[in-house]
Image (cartoon, rainbow, N blue to C red; front, side, top):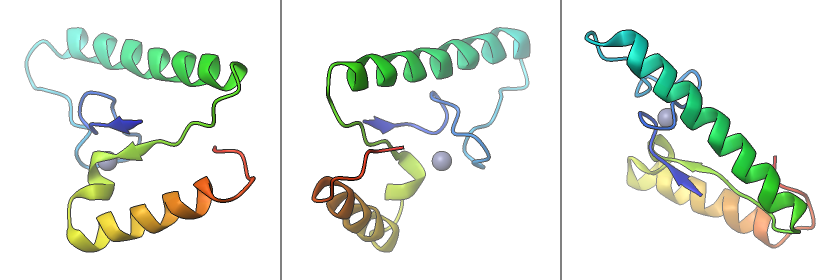
Length: 83
Ligand SMILES: [Zn+2]
């Protein structure tokens, strides 16, 4: 999965901002998105899929994208379950 940091509200990320207007609406929307992401990830795992999440901020630059690609390659070729 590739998640946008804003829409999926990447915890602790500087890109996971909350708009200054309609704050309550946005906070509820982000909470629903995060809850749905967790639910979908769990459902996929229960079906036997391995789930890897890449955040938008992990692809922002060539070097971070390369590091993310290497991390994913390591996970995909290992027998370690995704976290
Ligand atoms: Zn992020």
